Amino acid sequence: MLQTFKVAIEQFGGIERPIRVCLPYNYKDNQEHYPVLYMHDGQNLFRDEDASYGVSWGLADYLKTSKVPLIIVGIDCNHEGFERFNEYAPWENPTVGPELLKFEGVYGGKGKAYIEFILHTLKPLIDQKYRTKTDETLMAGSSMGGLISTYAACRYPHIFKRVASLSSAYWFNQTEIENFIEESDLSELKRFYMDIGTDEDTSKVDAAHYIRSSEEVYEVIKKKNIDMQFEIIDGGVHHETAWRERMPKIIEYLMR
Image (cartoon, rainbow, N blue to C red; front, top):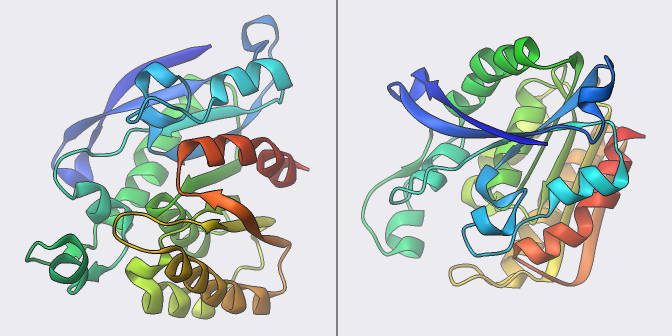
């Protein structure tokens, strides 16, 4: 069962953002409470007809067929200009504009405010509106969504205790995210998953850069001695079809 509504983001001047909530197959038939998985790029998660590129992660069908006891909350990204970069990057990047995007300016830096919105506005609303297990909160995202999910895991590991970062664009804030991981106490983080495909070639960044970027982050995280998985996916591409295929096993790992 998929429900959609809008929530104002006070951290971004009160602009409203679509929120998509997918409930477990038997939600209406019982009084059980459920863990909640928060995900980014909400328009791409559930139905092909809503997805930016015509293919979704298929998570609505997944919840229905798998009968996994989980609520998934998707937050639509900001499609205006380079706002997705800005909102999913915790720190500003002064070079990515002219060197990669071919536009002057400093990009990124709104990620902290975006996570504050999830934690202080959206999560309380979801916990009030639905039957949730308030202390069982997960987060997952891909590309820039992987970067901001990793940031959330480090900033609030006692809240976002099970986190997945797919095909992450760590390169956007490479030094900052590595330093932040290093200085963070992750002892309350229960599961952390990260992966990268061998064919993650986008129009801006090649596969070798993606792989090297994730490997460097992995080397920092593994020193934390937490329950984690890092997968290099042979033939994995930077696309919803790839994430759709991997996500069931990732959710199984996070929830076990």
